[in-house]
Length: 46
Image (cartoon, helix red, strand yellow):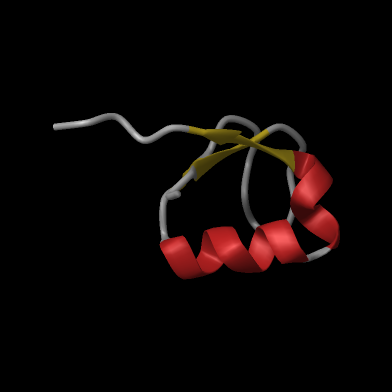
């Protein structure tokens, strides 16, 4: 299932509230130490 991420704690050039939609970047972040700095959200349809 595809998720987007919202940044809770700034890291690697991302600011709080940034939306990360690139699938490869989402996978890398969730597999790394910054996974606790983001939350998963369902992408909007349409």
